[in-house]
Length: 358
Image 1 (tube, helix red, strand yellow):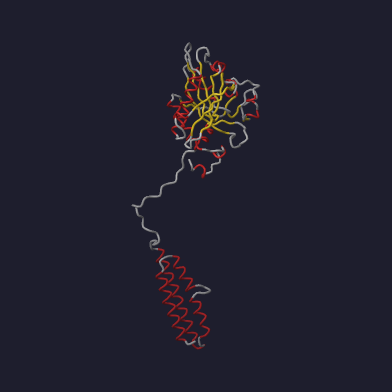
Image 2 (cartoon, one colour; image 1 turned 60 degrees about the horizontal axis):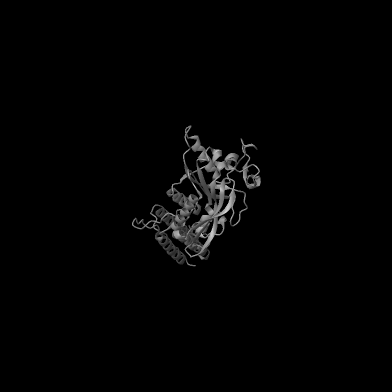
């Protein structure tokens, strides 16, 4: 190869490299140009260097000298472009347009059980009931004794409860996770009696309690070892079963009419004779309503009845002077019926795809 041809190739390469480096508008484009011209294996400069072996022996010193000069020029052009891009604003990032609406934050919402509880509290509050709370870890007195549940009753079996082995608990006074929210009734009536001055009658009680209860049930479509109850209690002079049925009917009508699942005249309540140690007489409460699809059926919602005189007497009320009613309804049952949920376990699996529907 003649020296003139070799030098011409070098000059052409230098011009192309400088042009490519100076026109690169981003780090990615500059890197592509570097690989094209300065690549160690397939770069243009490398290919020209291989042509040195074809130059006449007498011309090789001059050809080599000029090759090294061009190589330094190309490397300097690349370094200059690197500096230019490092100190220039990022062109690929668009300017901020403050007139464009922002992207809303994705926020969560209340769990369907919490929605049900709050709606229940609101309705019962309008019926004059005050919401109260109590501890979930209870003693034997409040969970059984004061509720007229004797020691030999099957409900006190260790296989039917979550007893706790904690410091301070003894076999004579065990602690357990409460199996019913009726324990709150006992605490409320005890507090009312304790705050009453000697010689005066304890005040009437009109409360509801909503909270978690625990029973060692095997989890299936209709049972879960933890669930929620709404417990209502009314103690006053002249309270009858008619008052109980009226309150439950008003509650049912208000709840399902407000949720669009039924109309007031389509909601019914019926009582079936039953037995609970803390109420006498005792009944099972069934509710029937027509949903938006026009379907209706009876569904067991919980238990109710007149407060047993033994319970009133245990907390300090005189059963000769006052009477009362109590009811306990399953929150999950109402929530499941309202939304058409067929498996209670879905409420506790924290599946976002399920929860987003509410």
